[in-house]
Length: 193
Image 1 (cartoon, rainbow, N blue to C red):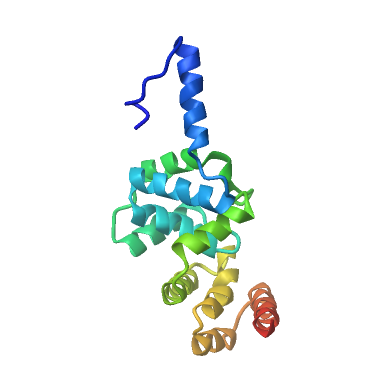
Image 2: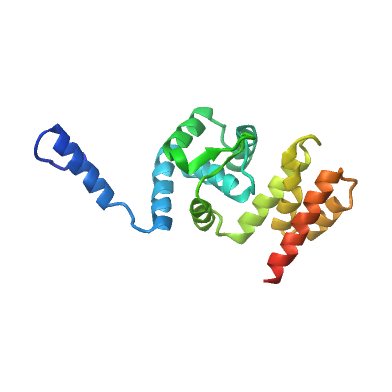
């Protein structure tokens, strides 16, 4: 649409008019702006890839490493992982997606996470299934992987109380047991509200 439009003046003023047009047509509300960004990403990378990458990052409390995304995204999408697509999407998201000191990718703005939840994770059954899939994945990680501390969070998110109880009754190391206990406490408090 912008390529068809005629702008007047020298190259610099034409570029300025194009940028002004683009900015004028962007949504004014933050949540709508994020959805606009998601739709643009979907046009480039496909909806399933964008939804799974952003959905995983949103649903994980601390984010996910590229290694985990490389395994989980193909499981969800049934499509081959293309590292170049992940790198290009990260570049397009720029400061909205940041990497922690531990190598986990997460959103810089909480509003982006809320927008991902609303846009991609609104279906409770789908969200519970994703939590269960993540808890299964995490339980297969080696005991020294700190992501295992998220198992209880995802078991409770899956609403599978029997699996959560079974996991909690296992012999857990002290750190994993403490994390599970804190997660259960937080879950009880938020469920009471």
